[in-house]
Image 1 (tube, rainbow, N blue to C red):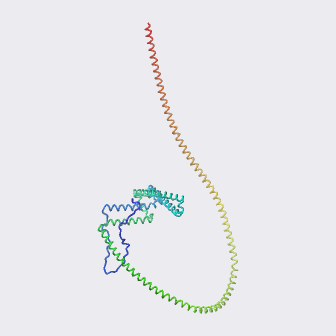
Image 2: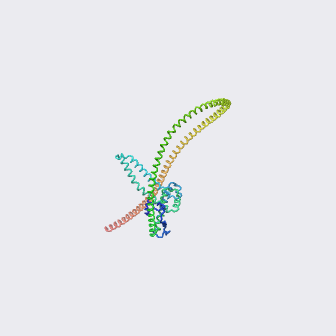
Image 3: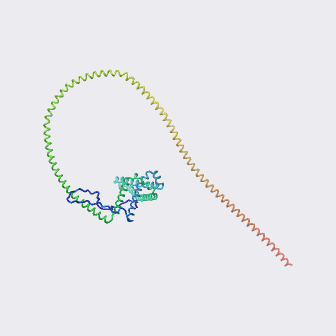
Length: 445
């Protein structure tokens, strides 16, 4: 219940005292500011209020745990050592569900954007097919959301059954997002408002309402003063605009006067220009004399420069030879390095080719080994089946031999008894015939 979307109605529908702007007013009547009302009680006394606060505290605790699940899922190794394998597995499954849900939502948003761009093709068959596919995808979202809710409830149940893991997870406050922290702060603020509301008695509530009404009346009175001052300010603004218009007129007149002054100054500027041209011609003649002197100095300096060039030419030649020698040596070393590196590169490529071939052979051998292991396991299983069958056949043969022996013994006994009976019958018949013969003989006599 505490993990679903929380919609909390405002507990007190009134003016926010901290947001009322008050303007100081000097009046003849001395008004004393109303005192801020605080509850007389500091602790909850009834069981119902304590239950309400305990439910809200439990909700805040669960929200704090749920807001850290994404951080725990991002660091699976640490979370598994901190929360245990069962909770870590549940967190990973919850993260997978959330990622799947977000992926489907982003896919649907992208598809909706594409369909909006292609609205002119809404009568086409492919357009209707894409709409149907989107409806199918949307119908799959509610079960996924229900799965996420059930997963969240399961994780919270596991965390509450393991207080140590819950405390360790709750200590990771840096992993919580700004939105979640803002939501938790709002819940804590709501708890403060609710706690204050539960501590407030009916008398205190009436006093507080009276306090709010007094503040409202003061605010209304101050608002009337503000309106009056705004009207006065509008009048002052109108007066200032009139003064600005007058000053603009004066400025325009000054601009016209300045234009006339500029026209008068053009004549004086022309006279100044003529005088400057005369001064320029005199300066030009003086500069020509200075240029001749400078050219003479340049000739002297050029001769000195030529002498210095001749002196330093031998030194430059020696340095050039030395530079050429060093460059040739460096070039030789570079060529030698390139040749050695090319040889090493060829050797490395050959070794790499050999390694790849051996790797392929190893993979083939592994595949053959896997096949042989599978065949061996099958052969072993068949052997075990044959051994069991052979054992069962031997046992069956033993039972059949015993049964045959028993049957033969019974049969032999039966034959012996029948033979004995037949012999007894024959003896009895022989004696009867003899007695009958004697009787006949006696009758004849």
